[in-house]
Length: 483
Ligand SMILES: [Zn+2]
Image 1 (cartoon, helix red, strand yellow):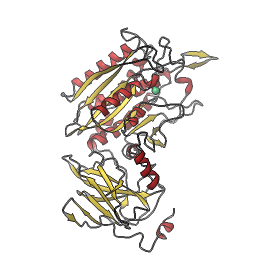
Image 2 (cartoon, helix red, strand yellow; image 1 turned 135 degrees about the vertical axis):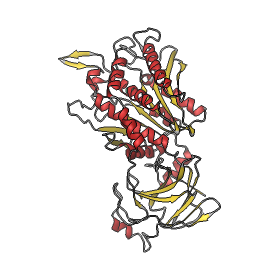
Image 3 (cartoon, rainbow, N blue to C red; image 1 turned 60 degrees about the horizontal axis):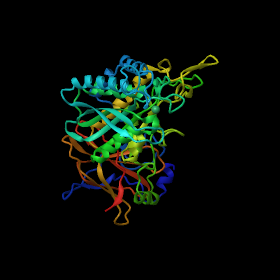
Image 4 (cartoon, protein in one colour; image 1 turned 120 degrees about the vertical axis):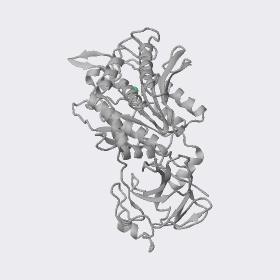
């Protein structure tokens, strides 16, 4: 849709009045039009419509985050990948008590490393072995202990709000039931474990507002068992997990044809929520929102805070839950209704995943460290760090966000529940054309619980985000119709 089409929508559209009123509960307040530039086209995205507010801009890393990113250490990441590969195999059905070879030795090594980081956290970080016995199931022939190694950096002011990053430390070779052959799993997924561990190391010495969980999960190749258990434990505890990332196969920048893409990281994010209820599906069919799941808002947030010079990475968001024929640990969190996404390298080389280590016609197969790009993994860690740290230092995603639909009107009233963060400064309304992939406009409305915008809810999509006194933004909440 062109701006001309948009203007042709009606004699009163678009209005230069940016919004009519905004009010806290009980105390109505009229807020002046916020900023100039109300009719300028969007800076990015496909909409380009003019209307209230100003073009939205990415959130730049602040000094604290830039310092944190500089501490992420490529040599440590490389050492972690090589150490994990040296356990020979980390197959879920491999030995749990051999001190040298197998998944038990890898589990104990990861545990020891994380406890070392926690020792320097002033008591803020705790580490646990979270374990259960998986009864026989697909790819699990006998009762098998599955153990996640979980480090938790407890938040100072919003400890009940949680963000999670995982890599899976189990590995496999060609036969998914082969627990004895070498399965170095350098890219799949020592790379993701190395990312989660390096983030635990650099964040352990810092104070975070919300809680961050760094987990090395097991049983992924046999059926997402470790992450399934982790997500179910959170759900059973009523945990408020507001974002989760699986780093799975983030180790190489080289495609199977030899071309390299050192600066792109894919982020898979679903549209229609895996855990959508029938009532939510009815609403979506009625008024749209298939591109506005919490996971899509999370992905937009990652682009907003992590696609920049500080990470050296471009985020390629993919609008699907995962790749064809594959699935990763974020699906376990999506199944519990938590927003989640999967980071993975730009182009895969299937000769170096899920393969017996062997040479055929002079070509080396197998998931070996020599095929990893450690500079690339370091930038992946920076993307994760920028996303997680920004999330955890910002206010939480607004809750109870409602688009008021009790009357037929040509403006739009939004309501939400005020957050409890001590440094909460207020809220921003964002909007975009329904055909635009990204939010294009922002309207600051102050510390209020409701606002009315002079734009028809029939014609654009709206969202609400929170902002703190330091200017950190939350992810956007997409409203539900209500009263
Ligand atoms: Zn994997």
